[in-house]
Image (cartoon, rainbow, N blue to C red; front, top):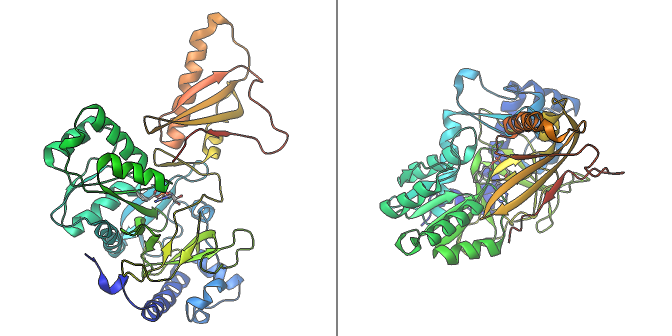
Length: 432
Ligand code: DLL
């Protein structure tokens, strides 16, 4: 079943002609309405009329997460605030979040893209889908929800956090599809197994993303739950989940390229790379009105092909991701930058700025321990004082990253110093 045959199966020439038209409109829209882009283009001596087709993309400036942060919160919006009907946000590299805004039309397009992805996985109007991504500022919950409603499926807006309730409802409601992170789905599988409920479920499909996962992990999920699992990709800056998704061929993720124009660039030279070469994925949104982004550097590493897929879709496909160019970690689906921890602890006078993050995966759930170094030695009779520092540090870090954390205070001068790049992260997770 195909949700939007016209968009997903058009010939390459038709797609390029649509992209050319939409790119030109977008460039004019940002030039007229976003001083940041106008200045950047003027500095390069470019007028909107110079952009005639997608071949001219390399003339345009890049946009980065830092640009969003520097224009926090609404500085890159291209429409008046009254036309924005929804805000989402994700972690910035330091204290400030990256804020994104959507017009009503943007939300409709986002729902359409997510609906396409769910349809690609097989979800239809007759399905009952549990959305177990977080609802709120994170785009996962409301994004998957909007797509599922558009299809006409029965949506159970679980969000995250109560696995027992989720598995009970999965059995009682006869849930047939689930959208959540792959690691959470493995945890759900384990819970069902330990409760002896695994044979009572009616689950057929899972649409998993928001964090890296391997083919082996997909196969494990599929065999433990007797389902088909699909990889959905997105990022809040570009819209959220629904930017790309894999089909039953599992041979790359189909990009909704009639809305999000992909490029792969060399991360060092920043020059475009040909199909098949691994580099940084860059997107230009070509239909968004609220927060259109030109050549947004995702920092995600992959390659692209424009060959037709065996499923008959002609849309460009990106490979499963093979890493990032920055130090962003994804812990329980939440994006975390080590610099956020640093920013939080430098406010605390009782600890030094040295820290070590230790990430593990226990029962398929990620855990984060942060070791902090005390500024001075404490005696054994000062346990209360140490407990207070621990509490204070825990609250400060949790507020900074929006994730539960275990803080361990260690002796002064005990964290390893480095002559070069400091090692701040030990990631013990094995994602296959
Ligand atoms: O994670 C949006 C999303 C929600 C995607 C639900 C899929 C499902 P952000 O919080 O802005 O948005 O994080 C975006 O997460 O740049 C990737 O590094 C990573 N990521 C997202 N999906 C995948 C995936 C959402 N399928 C960042 N595979 C991106 C690998 C993924 N990494």
